[in-house]
Length: 145
Image (cartoon, rainbow, N blue to C red; front, side, top):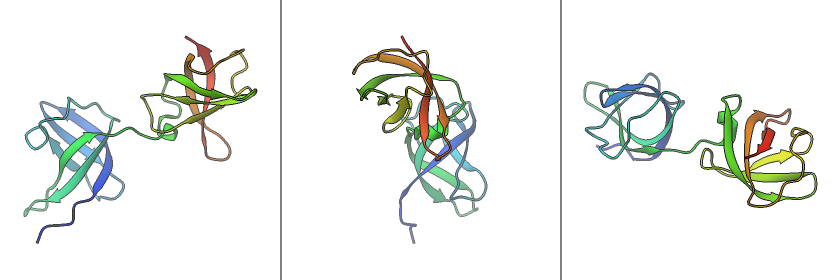
């Protein structure tokens, strides 16, 4: 009997020579990922998010199939460096940033971006991400590129 296939998201633990391991909240232990079963994936780097379909071999080894790079939510990138994005909207004292680095919109406001000055829609900005007291991701220390 085949297990129902639903996609999971894991993080790359390590990857070299065309194979490696993912860690995933829904799975105990590591999940093997290899280019042989996933010829379309690039060389992966630790911390990268990958979506996949889990299969379990007769010997109990867990394997990732149909793998593809997955874009994480902004909150997963908090404290991991500076990112670039585009101002999607700006409403006086706050706005939204979109970026290829994360899924969805990122809130940013005047309070966390004292040096920013005037911004407009479609402007390119560089910023850091933090998770605020309400548990929401927020763009901070932004500057115009």
